[in-house]
Image (cartoon, rainbow, N blue to C red; front, side):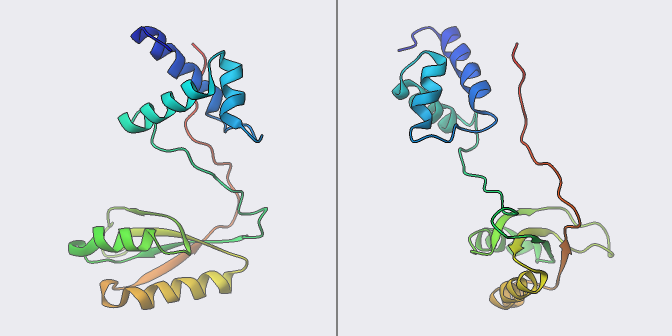
Amino acid sequence: MVERPEQEETLERRLILATQAGLPIVPRPYAQVAAELGVSEAVVMERLQAMLASGRIRRIALVPNHYRLGYVANGMSVWDIPDACIREVGQAMGRMPAVSHCYHRPRHGKDWPYNLFAMVHGHHRAEVEQRVAEMARQLGERQRGYDILFSTRILKKTGMRFGAA
């Protein structure tokens, strides 16, 4: 087990560098990372849990390539939600099966009244439109209007990357 704080910090940095581009796609990814770092699988899992608990890392999650899965219609639904219920609606919307991610953003004048954004993927535009219309129906009076902004091209998406020091 790592005993000194500076050793712990060094291990955490090495762990972040080893996993920031993704875990290896093998039956035991944590064991492979552990072998690369020269520690046990238990140490890797313990350190990741500690970093999650402290907020040093936000999450460990699967990020599927929705394009390869056939979901090529991508619509950012934008919503005008009363400020008094934005948190409640955002949490409810984030749990909806059609929504991959959802977030609150400030309004920008009368021309942009939208304050809640939710990404919806589908096999074609009509499917996205149908899903968003169903979301609007479920929200009822808690939404005052919405629009859908469809993606026109694929952008490379990666999170923050740290370089070796």
